Length: 596
Image (tube, rainbow, N blue to C red; front, side):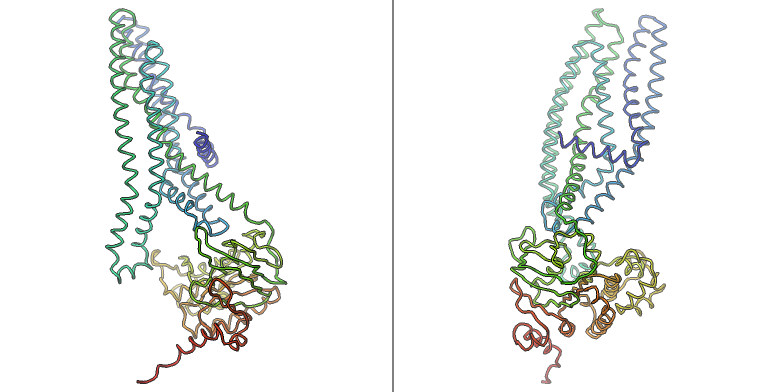
């Protein structure tokens, strides 16, 4: 109950925040419903006046009936129209809040958290309900006000009519039972629902489209999606069937009570113990009790699903708040003097028992270029994620000029970073803005964007576009689509937008470029970033191409969850161990095959 009250408070405060006038006007609709329900009273007065030939009663009944119905209808109509506008505003407010929270969580560990993923999937499925939350809440309030009105009118006919209300009370119990069944079904269906959504998304994913067609996976994905969807819907259908049977039994019991109540009032009227209008009033109210007393239960039951969704918004808020509390608050340094130190760092991803890194100790001097090499899965990208603060070490710590990275404010630290990744984002903006988002204060600064494009070796690419930097990208927007290598050049330009980063990550930034283009790119990069040494710029390079790696100040070979070797190119080649073997293997692969 307390959780539901907090969810109601969330809905009301959100509505009040987005539109106070329409929120205040929401009382009109329940008032209109009460006036409409009083029609039964005016019908009773009118009937008694006609039977007793009492003109004043007839006039009162007619005036009350007409005025009540007309005014009640107008208030109900006005309230419902304002409520619909308010619902759209509330839906938008929740959409923005959910997107903002998900996008601004300090790290990426929540993506490996099954509870977070399941809660978010349930929230995604019920997100449309948040837009209708005010509708559900207003209908619940309207129904409760109507129920109180009918109760007062029934007692006015005869105190014994309360028995009719008592017959409707089991609906409260059945409504609670139905909510529990639906809640359990929703929780049980979350994981298969998430799987079905993932499989459906593959059918629309362009990157997956080629492999789906080459390997003939369409039917298999369709079958798996069908099974996952069936597993998702099965507990929900089971809960709905059980709820339907319970509702049928409840309604049969109530119908028997209505017949008995009408018979009782008719007996009193025939015996001269009640006015004739009471028969009309009871018949009218017996029809309304089904609506006025059972509908609140049904409305509150329906509201329960909305409140559970609102409760998940509160859970997401609490999750984000807890993540913010765990984050440090110290500002990032303006420059690096000592460097970055991995102090006995071990790491495994949340929910996994497998170590990715184990007891890694490493010093990256300020102003240096560090290259990470190793087999796939050796932990190279994990090191980048740890340095970016996307995850915290499971054991050990990372020091930035002697300060634990965990104590730095994540937002402040990331303002001092820049990065280009192998799995880069394809921002379908104009070409200039696709690069410019790498430094939001200079998003529309044509000069800075052009400089970043030039450093990335993408000047010819941008010039060749129909409208240059103003060209819309992305076929889905009727824009120009680019090859993977062209997208990667723009992503690299985005990474080079920030003028004074402290750490620059280049994680396979040229994987889609040829070796000659990569070599020229890094020559330009080295010349353009020499000024960064004054502020201690650290560059972390992850690449499989040793022609690029060899220029690094320090090369770290990762494998078996640890640092296998560390040193300069000449030093590691002289050692003749892991690095030398990998270098020789790659060099041999470029030699022409012998003629047969």
